[in-house]
Length: 424
Ligand code: HAM
Image (cartoon, rainbow, N blue to C red; front, side):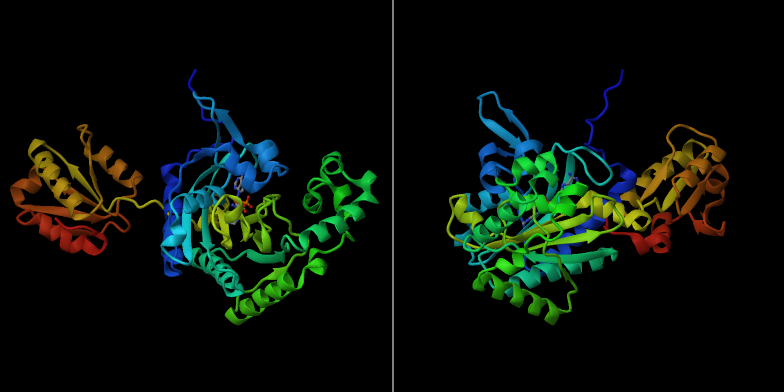
């Protein structure tokens, strides 16, 4: 029996890769314009890193991590997200000494043991950015503007930006207390999961998908009514700056995030087109995280986008895999020899070309050229060699052009060069 892949971990096939490359390349270009530089961190880290940053009572740490002991009995975890590893590297390499503000981005696979469904996988990919060392609300607005810019650039417009503030270590405990007291009155209405976690992580109850929890929390106290002066004016300023930049958003005071490190501004880019998995990107400010992980007291803000979800949203508007420009159809040994060296020259010149090496009939070669969706076919047979001219057929409309064999490489290049990328 053949071996199959692991449930929830997908292959990305050549037919889809062009869309992935487009999404990655656009991120490199746009994030680069805002001064972000790429950082690459390992996919495995010490388990402790995620427990300390994401939080012991979160779903991710409680139930979703791929954790194992290595041969030296060290507990390691496949990264469930990118922020904690990037912070670890930032602190370990003292990147804060190089620049007062560090702007980083990353892309790659993340791992969570969740129940797979459309848009939710066990290995999924994130493209994320983290800005460290600046707590000015203009940075929050800029990060959100950059995220919106990205969605405009890749052509995804059926998304909307929601923002909230989760307060800080000063005001969040008071809100938490108010919420616990509210939930205590409605305990029997909560689902078993929320009955268990309403004291350890009461904010998560606001995010519970169960109908009874939703109903029980309709009138729950709003975090925005409990912000301290500092958090309140920061949130006001973020909104003013977003308005100045023309970045559209709405406020969702029930948005809580599944990771404990957030402070002040949090946000999600949501869609109605992916069923239950409505967040395409998410993030927020985490002003205490760097210090919590043993670094200096530096503020931070960032986000991550789910690439699989972006690909699903692009759907038919994804990027088509490039097809060959030219097929060299041959008949006879001499023609094959000429085609073989010509093929090499054309490929080095950057013109994607194909030929047959299995001695197939001309008809079969043409079928292959059609299947590969080649733009042109060049016919090279004994007659052409004797005549000194070959026929170039444009496959879309059948139009034929005669090309002299003497100098055929240059002749083909001048005809097909619009897509050439490299030169000899
Ligand atoms: P997160 O909300 O856990 O945040 O994930 C960010 C995005 O990753 C989600 O909005 C979603 O698009 C995608 N995603 C998450 N889980 C899955 C999954 N199982 N399958 C497919 N896509 C998924 C974070 O990870 C934070 N580190 C974001 C951040 C960066 N905050 C500050 N900086």
